[in-house]
Each structure stands twice: as structure tokens, then as C-alpha cells.
Image (cartoon, rainbow, N blue to C red; front, side):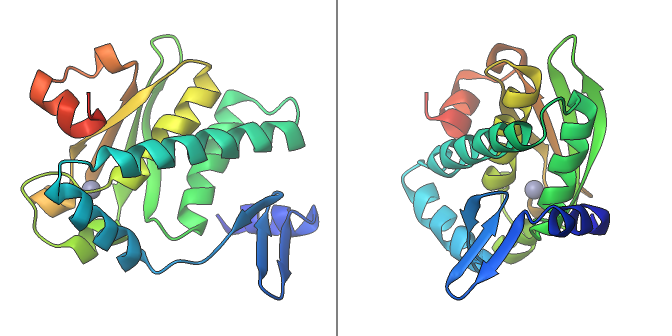
Length: 185
Ligand SMILES: [Zn+2]
């Protein structure tokens, strides 16, 4: 993760000016994690949590598109490593790739120390909608397909780690109710 920061600094891909933070030409801003957690609590009241997922999916896709324009020829595995490092650098926890199957367009990520799960507290449902959105968007760009993501295990539910499956929607093995919860469809 820190080697990524060094690379970005060397290539002048981090810009910090008064009132402006840019990473790889994309405007960014530090936001207290509690902001996302409070947005999530409000969205959950109307079963609209997928809106956080949808917006993060777009952001994840845009990030990788930008990255591949800046570094043409970036291999799938390198892009994946960069994505994981960027998430860690951004403070969303410690992600690792548990399984990468480009042929089946499936990836499994694990996330340790999720700040969202920690701040949200105990929950009956998984809460890392932002991370699963970023994973779906990044995965879609890297594997050149419209992929989605579901959090199969979450620390907020009492699991020991947060676990995410990225795959084509029909291969996520979700029930009708789960599809509604995860994607609003
Ligand atoms: Zn989680």
C-alpha cells in the first residue's frame, strides 16, 4: 500500500492544493466514515441501501477506467493489486483477494477491519454496501463485463471477517428477496 503511495507521488498523481485533493486526476475529499454509516442507516429505513452500492459501483468503474488510461497496458492482476492497495490507502480496511477466476468472471475479496462494520455496530444484515459497490465497479472494468457483488459474510453480523463475491448477477445465487435488498430489483 505504501509503495503505491510512493508510486503515485513519484508520478505526480497526487495533488494537494488549498481546498483541492486529486488522485490520478480524480477529485477526492476526506469524509468521516460516520457520514456513510448515517446515510446507510437512513437508506435502510426505506430498503434503499442499494443506492449506496450503485453510486460506489460507478465510482469503482470510473477509477479503473482512469487508471488504465494513465497506465496503458496494465495487466488484470496488476490492476487488481492497485485496486486493493487504493482501498487500503483510502482507509476502508484491509482487503485481500481470496480467489480470482477471470474465466468464470468471479472474484472473492476478504476485508479485515472494516470501519463501516465497526461504526455501524451489530446488524442482522451485511453493511459494507460501499465496499461491495467499489468491488463490483472495479471488477466489471477489469474483467470487461457487467458484474455485481454481494457481501456473504460481515463482521457486523457476527462473522469473523467480511467476505465479498463478485460475479455476474445471475451467478451470485441470490433469492428474489435478496436481489431486492442488494440491488433494488
Ligand atoms: Zn462487512
